[in-house]
Length: 176
Image 1 (cartoon, helix red, strand yellow):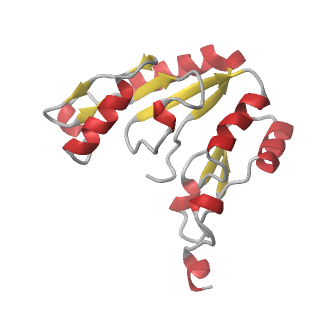
Image 2 (cartoon, rainbow, N blue to C red; image 1 turned 30 degrees about the vertical axis):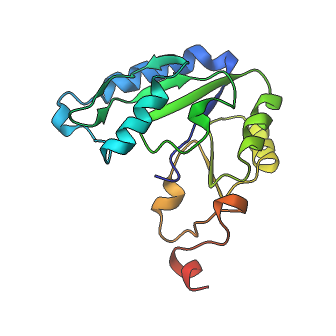
């Protein structure tokens, strides 16, 4: 979807915890029967995503694909800068690029490459970090410790800012 996370920025100090969580949940939610696996919408998009994940980077989890059934398993890819090919377009597939950052300067570099995202998801319990992040990085919508729920609630206005759109819709906001 257009509000699915395009990438994850993870503090370098939390890399091992992040990787352990990825391993745990990718195993827990693994689809055993490929007939039940979500497929890529068509051959052109399958080839596009396959090309993206077969580039030069570190595949942390996943990376397998089946061209006959257009299935790509959930894939987590470590990238090393904001200019990686996976950062050039929305993926619309089961691939999550991850960058392990040292400081907020590195977060700023990613934001400046695509300012005013449609959605910003912050996973933290650190209230000053959350507040500072919301103030420093404007976006269409912000969720704390969750993703995509702002789109799921039809009573909440949904919209973007800057290049991600303007205004909002859903419920009363659609009429206004």
